[in-house]
Image: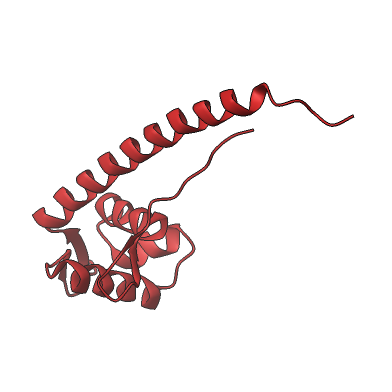
Length: 119
């Protein structure tokens, strides 16, 4: 038996705006300096990637991505300083929640290990 958890942040309207998908997208933008390439690398449409970025920006009331329009070499994108701090804090929260879940799960396993099985 194992425990698996996902950390999903929701906004004031109870709509999810941050979770595994947005995390992977933001990490991809950091790595590839392109929203399109980041989206493609995780099997996401460019339109959905922009929708996720808009949702992040609406929920936090801060800008997440700076873009330059294409030219000869194409456009580029990078995360804002706020987005980088947000990403770091989210990943730290994720680690803390996972650690807590593991401790609680170990306690759960200890409680049920002595329960007699029906014959």
